[in-house]
Image (cartoon, rainbow, N blue to C red; front, side):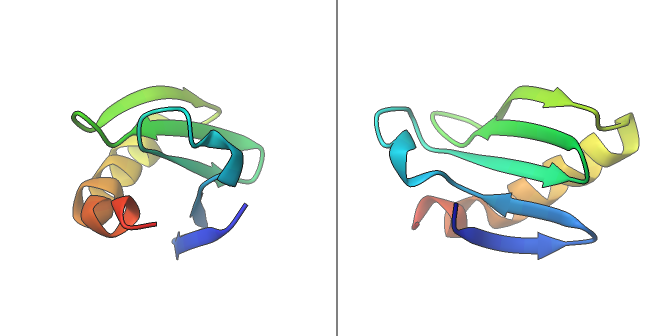
Length: 72
C-alpha cells in the first residue's frame, strides 16, 4: 500500500494488486475510508466515515493531483 500523498491527515494510496480495475486512488483518515475513480473521469466510488466537508476537501486534493496519481 504505497502512500502517494499525505494532506491534512488524509492518506492517499493505492494497492498494487488493484491493477485489473480502472485507475483509482484510496484515501483514509482515522477509521474513515474511501475510493475515487480517476478514469474515465473523477468519480467517488465510496466514502465511509467522512463528513461532507472532508469529502469536499478530498475531492479538491484528488482533482489537483489526479495527473500525478495516474503516473503511479
